[in-house]
Image (cartoon, rainbow, N blue to C red):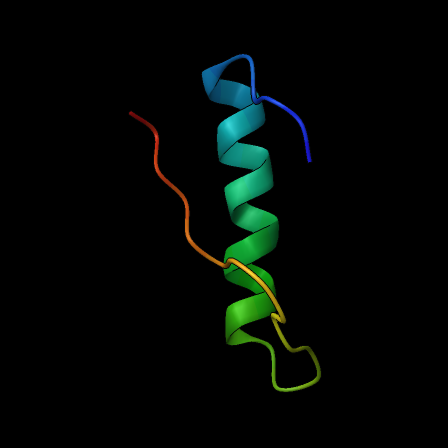
Length: 37
């Protein structure tokens, strides 16, 4: 994954990660953390 260049992209991508973490059918195999600093 490359750089996230704006807040809208961060929100969209972190939403995908959150969906994967809460879905019973998906597994996050690496990472899974988001930081908007």
